Length: 270
Image 1: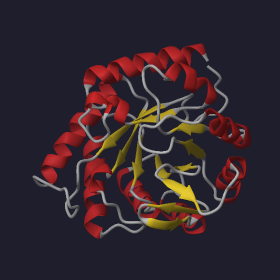
Image 2 (image 1 turned 135 degrees about the vertical axis):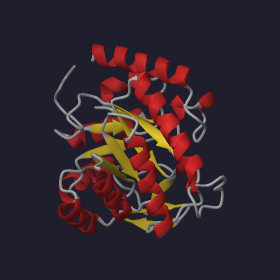
Image 3 (image 1 turned 30 degrees about the horizontal axis):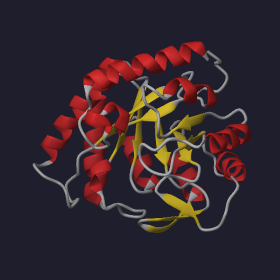
């Protein structure tokens, strides 16, 4: 292992995603909050038992997403879910409030003692299915300093399900995200959930990131991890852990065990 670029104090961490079912207030919500929390605890326990190094909780089932600020009921339910997960696992926890509510994510992190947040658009502007989303790094950095200064920020570089308003160099975006926007790590994804990462794009981000960690945010499976992990410093994995490899389904414990084993083999050879 390299030990050079740690995230959460871990060398090349494998971060499992707890894809929450639709929360109260979302169009697809069914069965009440208790049902959402039961599934969150079950998925988190399965991922922890398989051996992931950390978890991130996100309101994946809430589509269509608000562009930025989510309503109060979403913040409340996301906090309840994060607390429910933290009660049944003993690994670092992260928060992602879709589509891009970093303020809510930091508030939830402060309330539940999470270690990090993910911010999809921290700098620049991206055209998404929610419209144009602009980064608010100045606000995010100041809120973190006030609420939870030890919480780390992992921010996407040219995030999936989005395109920049004008051509942008991945290296420049990476340097801005880390140097001018105060992120602690950057995330590289494919074009959409579960899509593979472009090698050239990943190499440009890795080169520009320098001493900061680069996390893979999509495309990591038991069959791809051996090729991808040497190019990055960790991975966030959701759909590959879930039934049939489809995002939003329940965690498949057998798939989780196989992927974690493959990840550890790859990590041990880097």
